[in-house]
Length: 408
Image 1 (tube, one colour):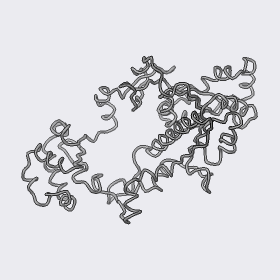
Image 2 (cartoon, rainbow, N blue to C red):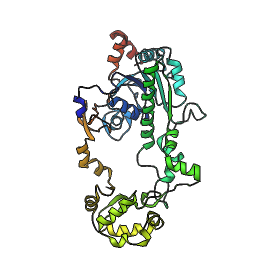
Image 3 (cartoon, rainbow, N blue to C red):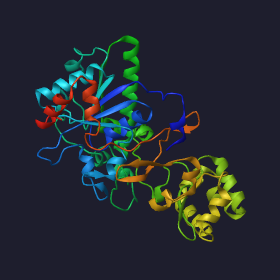
Image 4 (cartoon, rainbow, N blue to C red):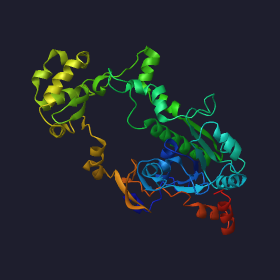
């Protein structure tokens, strides 16, 4: 457990209750940050029907499981949360939702764009029970256009927003990024919107709708290349060795036993690199005198530096250059996770799950007062239903009735 768990000071979002109709990646990733920061995040999940199915679809994503329909994938997105099964298509399920909304600060979802209205989870539908309620929506394409009913996923956004044509070798096929970065970016942006709207609601007593969509977030992250094109007609393309489009050398190079990334983003780093490598012959080559020269002769420079770096292994160059020139080994995922530096900075954590004590998870990248945020395992499906319903005034008989009729 992270050291911050022992801190007596409350986490910054402690006391805030967030109800989430979420599934899979982007939405759960965003609300996990809020839960790690202390918010009570209650996942509303579809109940099992006849003992089958139910829950966030991420629970069934393989290949690795803690038990049937309890995947390791689910743990990656749902630490620190609670789970309540609830059929929102039933009148009784809607009654429970309204009771929850009355006690909550936000109701959030990452449903398809046309579903929040239908399921009654918009501000217009819930402000009657809580005028200060924030209703936040994360969809593929937004709720206010003709694509609202379209399903959509991260990989599609990478394709449409131009990422795939920016990724990979210039002579190869377009490539997506190896991770679902649009999901992660959109979830993070969404979480900022939720927190901002809750802060405003506390000041004004009025909530509102907050919307984010995958495509808008993906387009926004095109950043400076987008401005280059919109203003100058300059289309940024793929570069060899994942090189930066303008700074040189800033790319991958071959060492004796593998690959490394060297980034001379500033002219001073080129000078430091040449001094550290003790290569006045390269430094004095007129083809490489300035950044503009190096950019114009990047292919030649790549070959020259490949030949030099290939004389020693990655570890040698990393030790020689670390802290002087921006440099990193190009690790496989196994090497990245086994990197001792992760233990040094506390980015690996363990939590106790009913099926696996000491389950390894990633720590939050956020620190408070110098300490990582505390983690606990993601909840089993419906694990908190009894406690939540009891708090809302449902006695044991009423809770059993709701469960028997498939409402919870």
